[in-house]
Amino acid sequence: MIGHDRIVIVGAGHVGSTAAYALMLRALVREIVLIDSDAGLAEAEAADLSDANALARPARIWAGSYADAATARIAVITAGAATHGAESRLSVASQSAMIVSTCVGELVQAGFTGIILVAANPVDLMTLVALRRSGLSAARVIGTGTLLDSSRLKQALAERLGVAAGSIDGVVLGEHGDSEVAAFSTVLVGGVPLGDFCPPGQALDQDRIATEVRDAGYRIVQGKGYTSFGVATAIVRICEVILRDERAVLPVSTLLTGQYGFADVCLSLPCILGAGGVERILLPALSPAENTMLAASAKALQQALASMDLAG
Image 1: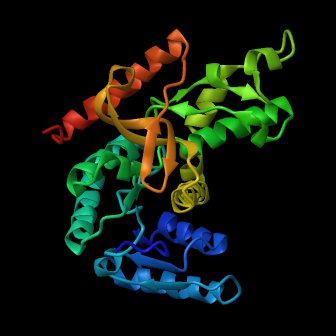
Image 2: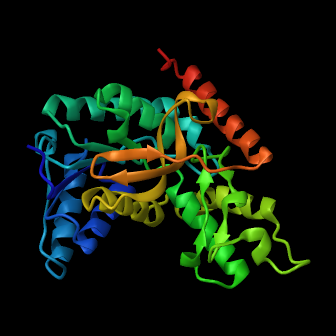
Image 3: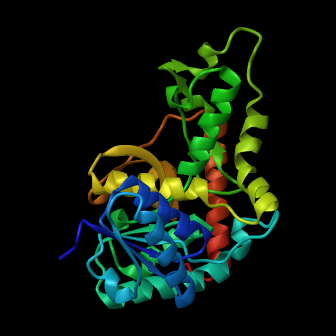
């Protein structure tokens, strides 16, 4: 029996512990379990979180084992290889694949049948690794994908346009990485297309904004050594949508089965998310240039996959 009051986080590092903290503050579940190959780290983080929980809403937080995952509603996988400086996410794919495959294997052996949410980088490839290792349906294995990138795009546009980020609707598609596609043709500001909203003669430098959004993670890593708050918030938002069966549309990494002509690759497209995971993949009308860039993004992921010898 799957419990709706337990989330397991596999990986108690910066992202995992921050996600646990955000989940606790959001009061989404009554039980949060941290699992890590370094049991001492998991125990210390759980103890620190429990101290904070005494001043927050009641929840039980502990360092557990994969046996605790059997009845969890969601298993969040943050364990993976870390990047350093300007190192690309794809550069750590093989290392992360071994870690993620081991973690998912342990979940399966424990009898987990819930939804797997992958946050380990490179997230699109790791989502496919988790999908193949788990034996779950594609709907139930999701990557955090470009949700964070899309939030960065909205924030960058909001600052330039002088409106609240919540007034902007727009997405980043494809890989969560160097080949991602900022789909400016889909952007609406209060329901008005971006091109119509901008005053005449004040067109935005879209290439500069796209580069700023794409490289945001690298700048953070170079400054503090890792990222945590942004991706943790994305994790919590996805968990919230699933637990509350919101059927909200979020850009997350999911398996393609012919969308835009691509198959057997995971990348981000807008998806309707609910209690069962991905319920429908949406296909925005893109400009010819964006279609070309999305094809290049899918190809880059397919090539990286082939180089890892995971295609079989």
